[in-house]
Length: 620
Image (tube, rainbow, N blue to C red; front, side, top):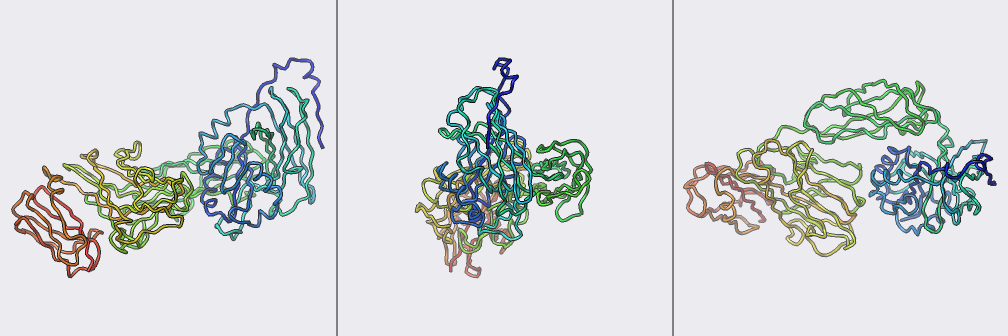
């Protein structure tokens, strides 16, 4: 039931005393236990929402796209009604305050949340709830604090289960943790129209009671309320009654750069107070890799529903890839009542000392990333992996899974740090294979480098499906794998690295930005430098034929400025296969590869002050 009333004081003072109120933003998501992209999106999305727990509250509708999971069956009517209301026909689909944002939720950013939270609201919403036996009793007050016409406005209330945890995934996408799951709209999905006679200062009181059904853990029940305009879909204000858990703290993020050039790091953790009691003390447990937990005892004050940034002691690490695990324990000296949301695992990279070029990588080894390489998978979803298909045979390549990665997700593949001191010119060559899903999807691949440990990055090469990344021009709606050695599927790219000449510590990476299209592959990465004069022009005039070869390969060396040279043949991993010194330069050179196994090799022509590398392919 509801009632409207005006405070007596409101009649004695002018309406100008009333002002707009601080906004609580509402984020709604349509998602599913059987939706693969949802699993990849929801972890980072929930982190973003939780890190802004004082500014935003969320409701998640478990729908039937692409198919129905068990939670959709718990309240089919209310979910279907909200899907119809927004015209929802895909998952995941995120909606911010009704009409401010409606998109793939992987594209939701901190700036979008911050900008919307800064817009004041003409309402306040206060909500409380209690659990009485098998019922949830809700009391809410919606107060008009600004000047707005109530025509077409409705008050909506939803009981949610704040956290649902499974030991085994209930659907096919592997998700085991769900947040903000809508259990019941009160009194139904249509909500309750605000009185048309409301004026500034008026309030409406709502009382509801719901008999619990399909609840996994009643202590996780909470209530979200919001005022929405049915004509424009805009949500003017949200309110929240938190779970009835007294003491519950958790780490929502560990703040530290992924790339570090110093072995000493000082991480900070963002601790969120999920409990209804103020958080005045908590233990922060932290460890590196699989090491022993260290404990940092914190005291202070984080209010219910608020967060605080806590700086940990400095940690000394070795070069290479690591993880830092941080977790909360003993909030307010008591046992944490929801241990599932306590911890966070964060990757980081301590850059090794730079190595000399050439850097040669054909991804022939089974281990991935290769030794000295690293991958940064910020969303902990689909990322760079090794596959057997290669540019010149079934000897491996690096695949970026655009097909399953949600739009906007970024995955990075780091090369070993290297130096170009003393180089006269330097180049990167690599093979790429890419097909697009359709013209509606646009994936991107970039090559970036930094000389100041990531403070600034320079993009030295970059292409998207719309700007020439695609190699196979036939769109494919199935997850795509290129044909090994196919010139239709693979294309070699050359990148001029002259802007990096003379730099002592260069860190480079391939950056994949998903457009939710189709898969991409790179292979035979080769960074070489020349230290003499005119080597680039010499390199370009040296031809290799035939490619591929069944045994003998011929090179034209008439432009080589040396009477003798050293020839070194290596595999794509850099292993020396043969070496011959003081070879007379007769203008041509024939290399016999007939005793080698099929695959790709590098022919290195070395003279005093010159080093020229040519790739050859053997197919007997």
